Length: 503
Image 1 (cartoon, one colour):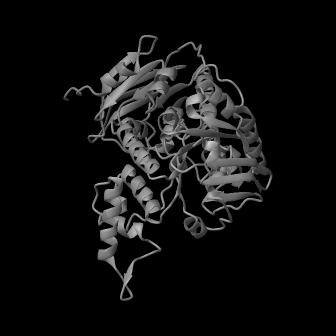
Image 2 (cartoon, helix red, strand yellow):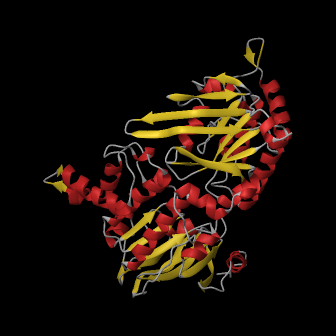
Image 3 (cartoon, one colour):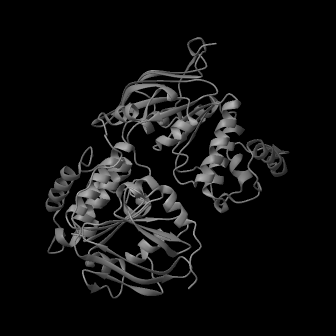
């Protein structure tokens, strides 16, 4: 039977959603069939989150209709979504860390016996569901003790336990290892075999080729197009997402490398960082690669004074940073763009302007009073310069897309006149168009003589952006290569898997 003869499991027609000053969704349509994976794609801010929040009951459309199995429905709450067989697994899990796996699975719908919670019964059913999905963990384990990958599968089990027929997965692989991603894909394939329809959101286009059957692209809140994944080439897909052609994944660089700006000697912090020494010159981008747990983030945090080390020295422009507290590092011209910008780089409940001003308050203060006009004027200059998309000066940082959040973090450090920029996973959770903009900004900063260190778990990014590549394993440096046409991902992986020399 052809797809045209099969009734969709889910249909959304003429969906509109408006927020103050923003037409978030403009005449969007979507269809999902049983037993298929539909990739929902688009840049940050394209409207993907708003659309799936409608399915989860967090938002209601201003106009348009939602149909499930041929019946028009109104999803006005999370409870209603559950009743219609819709489950949304957001990037931020809804598990309670202090409760066990079994307790989380039945939270809000506890099994009872003689008026009391039937814990043995819940445990027995939890075991059945866990075995069904192939997850070998103790249902009495606290969710806070599980790995991220295990927590994610528990979320999937929760959805199955309430008979979800439509499953939405928002960036499910963002923080998983390659092995964990493959396990996730196997779970998704099993769900397809059961006839569950899956909407899969990801910025990793390579994943879409491996797991999705069809794709749908949104841009600026509008439906752009869709079709079979097998019939859509990468260049066409990117152009649909960003509205322009990206001739290459990484912008060209033509930078003259200058004198040494950053020198690190003998950094130590337990087993996480062991005798790390390296240097970076003006205009140079040095990429840090290695497997998860290699010590790259820990090294950056020591340099920035965010963590206290046991020994080692950091020099900027020939001057030793003696105390290496965050304040000392910032004063010396070092800034850290953390891998977790939401937790460590921004105060999400404050406006973008407030976040921009936090490390620069001394410059905007006049006799103990904050000069809001000066702060706003300088933010406006960086907003225009970095193309930060904000609805207005009072828009909260938490409401911005991932790419624009990263630009706000970058703006506040640029305003500090930083010499050394430590980028830790700078494009994690950012769409392909915004990634390209971040790469262009990094190249521009290098051209201005900044010394840049970039930590990335994506080998194409390391190879596409770095002048030199430093590889870490188990807290130690295990290799360093000058980047060039002959260097491959396999070369970097081989170094990352080498046995570190003993100290």
